[in-house]
Image (cartoon, rainbow, N blue to C red; front, side, top):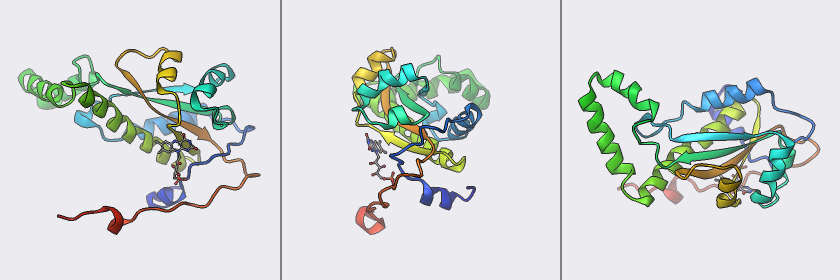
Amino acid sequence: MTDLKEVFEARRSVNFFDKQKGLDEQVLQNIINLATLAPSAFNLQPWQIIAVKTDEAKKRLYPLASNQPKILDAPVTLIIIGDRAGYEKDNPAWSDLEKMLGNKEALEKTQQFAYALYGTTPERKIKFAESNAGLLAASIMYAAKYFGVESHAMSGIDFEGIHKEFKLGTDKEVVMLIALGYFDESKTLYPRRFRKNFKDMVQVV
Ligand SMILES: Cc1cc2nc3c(=O)[nH]c(=O)nc-3n(C[C@H](O)[C@H](O)[C@H](O)COP(=O)(O)O)c2cc1C
């Protein structure tokens, strides 16, 4: 599927994954590498992913995801992680920006500005991590559809429990899970549900 409009129209949250169909490692890499073109603040890409693929890891995730069968049925579930400290100086995106700006002073000013915007309160840190990682997550779901792979996002999960179980660092934030795989054709997907449209949700001022 190469037409973007078609990809948007065809993507669904697929509740039923075919347990017999694995997800090729190269396809997974293609999906993630395409999705990394997602925009992010200052191009800082404050995100990280754990791909839960083995039976052992799935069994650890399952009870922390409200026992949603997708975790066991889908070949891979991604833990989408936001980095609340992704604006800090060790982020390699800064050296890339320094090359673009051509001087250290301009870089330092930009870093200070980013810190003021995203690093000064716990709320700002969370917003920074979650808004950017959310865009990555959406991009992954559309990229998956482009490569013929179905997806299902989940936030009906124990965020703290997953954080602990998968030994994430203090500044890391579990944002959502995304199951990836192929639809179990023996099942029927519920019809596409109600969507708000322009006039329901846009206030033009
Ligand atoms: C952030 C997020 C979290 C979600 N969490 C769950 C979940 O835990 N369990 C579930 O069955 N569906 C979950 N969904 C799927 C939504 O119910 C689904 O996207 C919505 O009903 C629209 O259907 P569609 O994706 O097929 O268009 C989630 C979706 C998103 C984007």
